[in-house]
Length: 270
Image 1 (tube, helix red, strand yellow):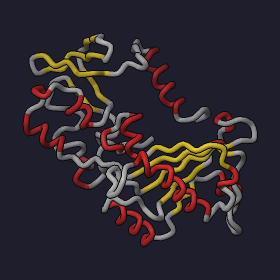
Image 2 (tube, one colour):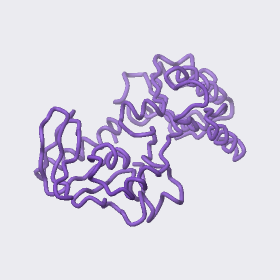
Image 3 (tube, helix red, strand yellow):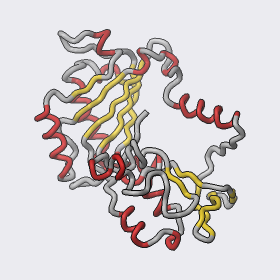
Image 4 (spheres, one colour):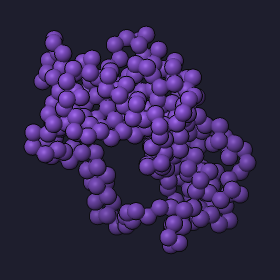
């Protein structure tokens, strides 16, 4: 979609507004108001309250059920079930502003590579090793990288002749065995660039600016607990009819309170 992924949410907003919806930007929800066991509205950080017949939360399930509800609004067993969900993120995002497209190593079709999504994960052994390190709190020494150049097919995203690169990187555990992401992030971006440089040797020469989101940043900036872009892990135990919890579907134990988004079936992704 020309203009970037933000255009999708703008289109959804326009569609909703033509049907009578009101959209309040920059209005953080402080809590869901529950009366007599039923969700009846929300209270915003600025003190305003809004009442409705139902409340639907697109936030991750732990924020929705443990952060927005008063402690006594959720049955004890339901609270324990939500708390037990695995949700620690293992991915990060790295964005590059580029002076031009990088040159790929000999034998790689430049046109095909620059207009495709490139997955750097040469073998199953490579991926297994990358994942195994993360299990012990260490970011992958040789990470899996999904790289693309959106400006190749959407020139509106950068000034004429310039480009951006977007990289999805795994595996970067939310909790590090040593140190913290605030200190480790810039050094790890170098690891990511070292990996990409094996395939695009002059990538560093093209970089004008770099911006990265660690799992901790995803939690702080976007508000996803654990920095998990899928809200909760995508495992067999947390998929299909078990997502987010057996018997829940899009409902919750609180009457009139519903969930949507990546926490629910079928999960995240656009």
